[in-house]
Image (cartoon, rainbow, N blue to C red; front, side, top):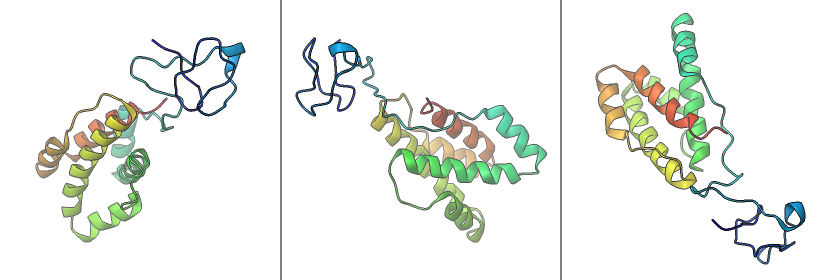
Amino acid sequence: MGRFCSNCGQEVPEGSKFCQNCGNTQNNGGNTTIINNYNQRDDNPKIPNRNIVSCIILSIITCGIYSIYWFIVMTDESNYLVDEKSASGGMAFLYTILTCGIYAIYWNYKMGKKMTEAGNKYNVATSDNAVLYVILSLFGFGIINYCLIQSDLNRFSK
C-alpha cells in the first residue's frame, strides 16, 4: 500500500514534505494520508445516516406524511451523490401526484440506477436493484423500496 497526498490523491515519495503534483504540504513532517484498499478518500459525500426502523415508525405514526418527506430527501440525496440535475425531491413528488403514481414506478427504477452509479463513483459496494424496485412498486411494496434505498444511502454516510 503506497502513500498518497491528502489533497489530490497522487502518490507521494516517502518523506516528502510537499506533493509533487499539487504542491500541498504533507501532514506530520512528510507523512501522508494512507488510502485504504477501496481507495476511498476524505472527499466522500456527507449524507446523514437514517435509522430505517425509525423512518418506518414515523411514517406510520404520521399517517404517511413522514414518508413524503423521506421520499423527497432520498431523491435529493441521490441526486447529490451522482451530481444529477434532474427532478428535485419536491418535483418528483409533484410528478408522482400528477401522474397518479405512475412517475413513482419510474422513480424507483431511477433510484436503483442512481445507487449503482453512486456506488461505482465512490467505490461503495452496491448492487443494481432497479428491476427489483420496479417489481416491488408494481405490487404495492413501496415502503420496502424506501428501506432498501435508505440502506444503500446509509452506506455513503460517514
